[in-house]
Length: 189
Length: 278
Image 1 (tube, each protein chain N blue to C red):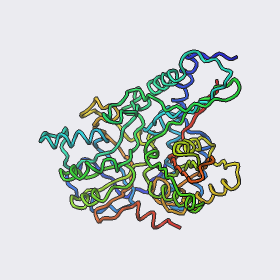
Image 2: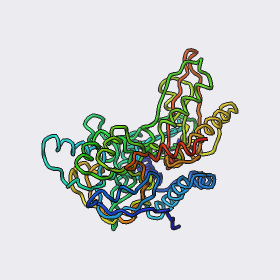
Image 3: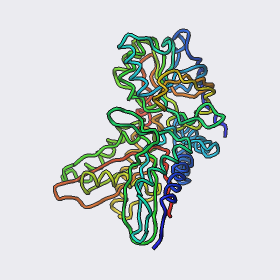
Image 4: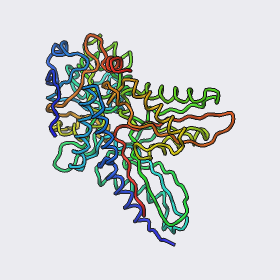
């Protein structure tokens, strides 16, 4: 079954500049291609430890998208296993610092806290939701996965993913809207 | 007296781990299809289409439905007339380690303080119940933590009555919002004490989707809570709509005259569960 998504925009990461984000609105479906970073709890903790110790990050944060995912091991002949989003609020404590360094977008599932929303507006970054629990479906949009750092963390390692037409919904846009809130107000009965 | 070897248990549990993670139970798939039919929000409907396609692809490719292959929650019913060779707990944990490794399932269990991954998804969380007869039944519920983290328990004063119970369950699902990957199944443990309420809430998730509690007053409570949850507007994956929960399953036990424990255990849309009898 081919699913036709009502796609508004296609974005290629890392972004050269953040201007393509301005026209996106909460609730838009978008397709993502290019190279994105993948990391979750322990990777974020390590990144912040590096920053606190004044040491360089294992990547250039400018224009990057960080996808909160801990994939299953790759089966033979495939770059990655099941790879859906994990719950984002657990990364809230680390996110403002990374946005300050130029990260343009984060992607996971579930709402972000007020501090992250404030930091997103301040640094002109967006938040996206991938389809929670659709790990097998989303793994087909991932063409390559290369470990970048912290390999000893296993499923929590930092990866560089090459993606093609990876679907996501804009949750927080640059004018301060939150799609989870808008959708709830609209469909509450 | 039936004799069951340790290897039989290990192999059965290993197989369960793989099947439970790859093959969504048909009644869950049916519930998701029905939800898609009923969903009025276009974005919610789209999300449900993707989830159904995901279940098909996972089965076809032998890939886990979700990357969160869960902590292995195991319910065992052990017939008292069985002679089990070797240690049952050890056999189950070896089965989990084997299944998670062979099936390329994500090891997701870590030390609570050091956060160091145990590497093989053990130890499993094992609930053992003795039963009459010669059957050994093992049920595996791989419990992902996007939903598990949204669980709650409250020791309510009995004076709050039914209205207080309803409020607490609905408030818990409302606060969870998009986090637990709705449409969810809501397990509720009502009564007992602190730990029995929580255990009943999880046991309630073992019930087939769409089944009702045999007690009519409890069944009515299930229906009432389901309706209120689906009026919250959260919808599939929190993207808006009316299909926020597929089912509310309540289990009850008598409690102390001074007490009204209510536990809520939330299950995501991937309500994975497999059972085997030896």
